[in-house]
Each structure stands twice: as structure tokens, then as C-alpha cells.
Image (cartoon, rainbow over all chains, first blue to last red; front, side, top):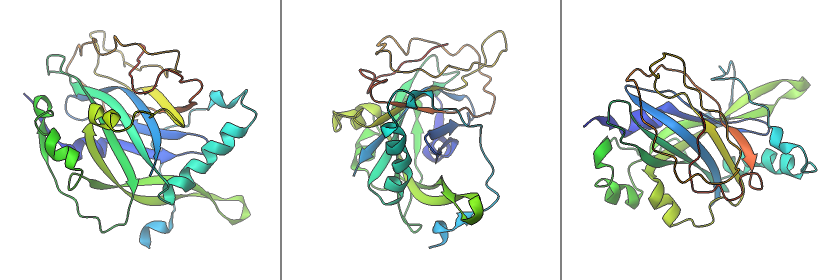
Length: 44
Length: 213
């Protein structure tokens, strides 16, 4: 079993706004990889 | 507030991806999308980034996560936690409490400066991690505004080629996603881009995962 710091995972996930895009990037760390992403804005 | 100042010398993480989905929507979608950064900055919305991930050497163990980004002040108290990938469920109780698991990050949005110059404004934000199931359990109408899918580079397959998953535009839900296996343990650092698509295009795609290779 492999452990990871939540902060490490969250730090690898970055979000920024473009003019008409929401850009999310993920920098793989250790052996952790991401297969798919979905971004949804949710009203507060 | 320090975080409100435009950040000069912004170093782009990756290239922009054109938003093809805007065509055919009469421009209303473009206007709606352009409002998102301001709505986020004014705490009108939060961003949910749903993703599926796991360890290359974890015998195919994958989990669906939701990272919630919310605009906040700089003095938010954060706490570090450690999860085992196989123990996410057991950590669920504390995650659902939603307090203390957040960390501070920065989200950037473009701003127009005088004389046509552009810069990036830094928005202090907190991000917290939860299981996707827990997210969707309390948010049944998730794909109501905008959704974005992408494929990111996964672990290196046996042929050594980079594994870029193409952006997918809501042609429907593929409930079979998730059966893929990590072939190799090597994961090369790098970033890819998410492209925003409309809810219409993503119709029936909300809350589910779809990948393509």
C-alpha cells in the first residue's frame, strides 16, 4: 500500500482561468497518475 | 490584500487550448464563461475538479476524487494529513467534515491592464480533497453550468511513449471507464490542459468519467 500526502496531491493539481477556458493541469508525482478530469463550477 | 495584486512575470504552466465548443452558441456561452473568473473571485462559485487517479504500482487501484477550490483569505488555517490510497474510504469521515483538510493554493485569472497589457491576478484559494461519491451525493445537479474533460498524461506504457488522453466532449457516459491498468511505474512529470466544454456538449456526461486513448 502506498501513502501520499494529501497536500502533495493537491499541490500537483493546478487551476487557472483563461479567457474562455478553465485550465487544470496535473503534475504527476511519485507513481501517482491521473486518468481523467472534469471541472464544474458550483454556486455557493 | 497582497493576493489581489497582479502577478507580473507569470510563468505559464502549459499552452492554451482553443475552445472549439463556443461555435454555434451565438456567443452567449463565451460571455458566460468570461464571467466565471469574476464569479469565482467574488466567491459566487467554487470549482470542483473531479479526477480519477491512482498509483502506477498500486495493482490497478483507482479512486475518483473531487478537489474543491474555493476563494478564500490568506490566513486560512490548514492542516496536513496523510492518506493511504487504499484507506481513502476510512478517511472519508474526516474529509466529510470539511474542516481542516484544506490547503492554500493560488488560482490565477487574466486581467486587462492599461494600454492593452495583460497580466495575471492571483486569487488565494483553499483546496480540499474528498471522494467523488461524497461530492455527488450532495450535488445531484452537478453538470448544470460548465463542465470540462481532459485526459492527462498517465504512466508510461510499455512502448515508452507518452500517454496523452485526448480531450473528450460529452458524447455520453462510458460507465466502463476505470478498467484500464497502469502498465509501467514510470510517470513523467508534465502538464496537460483541460478544455472547457458546454453543458450541452457534455449532456449526460455529468458525474461520470470518460476517457479515450
